[in-house]
Image (cartoon, rainbow, N blue to C red; front, side, top):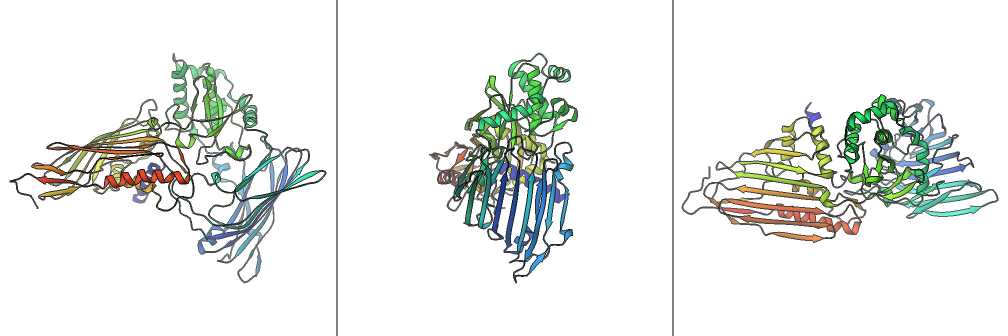
Length: 625
């Protein structure tokens, strides 16, 4: 039970970190090497294809042995066939070991079991016994796609970020009658060879070094070398295709009409839309299925979703679209990447997207009903400033706006008393808006104990302590969260003639010790995804009897392209007031720009370490007990 609680509160801490940027994941950079990854595609005029994949990898460390212990190939049996042509191991001494038949098996994928009715995917797995450092494992697969994908053919090769790669290549045989676009980024080389009946496209990458992730790094697809090919002519075409697949799924049946009227009541316009959004978010259970998984493009009908009580992102959007249609509000499903992919791929392809949300053109408003902690119209940071495709009769590619810092606010107002017995007692109120508000709802929903949550936050502060948290209803999506905090730290300071202390953090979801994790101490290599936000802290510190402030930290002001940080310190005879504010101005930073963000973080952390000196009044005796 204790271990479960530790896991739960570690998850909460990670959630706090990901409010602004994704956590650092450090990977060993030399655990294995890709010696050859070769994909040979034979495309057909009807947009079916055969692809053979040769994969040779060498384990370099014991961890690399574990990482290469198996290889899997997923497929959809109603659309695809998979054949393992051969698989073997070459040991460091050159001995070749052919794998036994029982090392290969095919089973339903976990998703096809947990999401019955959403996918029938299967997985063929190859187990590699007797691997050791220096062993090379080899597989040769053939996958046949005998039923065309609704979006056509999409090919994308991105080298494994954490692995060293000797050679990786794609060879495409394209019939002369088949339209295909292709492009590359980075160090891929491309040649084309024309014959009377086909074009052969050869793209390859050689001698790529292993790399390690950085704190807050965007998706590696944003900056890695890659090759991509697609039969799609434009981004707008993707919207038209999705519209054809999904349009009739949001039909308004008598059941849908009655439900919409019951939920909306006499409300119209945005008020009705918000009520319908809140109902959908609260009453449909989420079943995970990636948008761009083959065969997973078409949603269930609104009636099916309603009767089932569950669905994936496309189903949430479809049901809400039907409910809105029932009250005469037009909306469209929008394809987007809900993740750290921030840039546009070289050619139009559904690989750009992994999620579906809704767009209400009359109000120029995007809504994400799959996010069960999000207020109507408030999008997660990973949806901001993104290319999206609107699923409509004409299709349209647009961009979601970046968002403004003032949309996402965190305000902490804390009253702190330095007791005459050396104890610190604090209480306060935390108010949040926008994306931060959504994340606070998630934290409160997941917390198993408010006291344990408080204590876990205090444990990450210099003073420590114990406390209690109470909040407004986290399930109420109509109102912003308000959280009340109480805490105390016994034996926090000694009542000497002079008292030296920093401003006590208390219960704070964004204490300086947490924000310090976002600092990059070496030269930045990769771009970062942030969240525009305004964080404000107000502390009123009540001094012990017979003590006055003697030395105060200097006020701080720093403004740069990444945002700003400022703090002020004021005092009278018995009270010190501290105000701090951090503004993060951008959603996306290139590596060279990240130094500006570092400057803000360093300034905040340094300011938090500043010392306040209290002096005991003349003629009174210090208590050193």
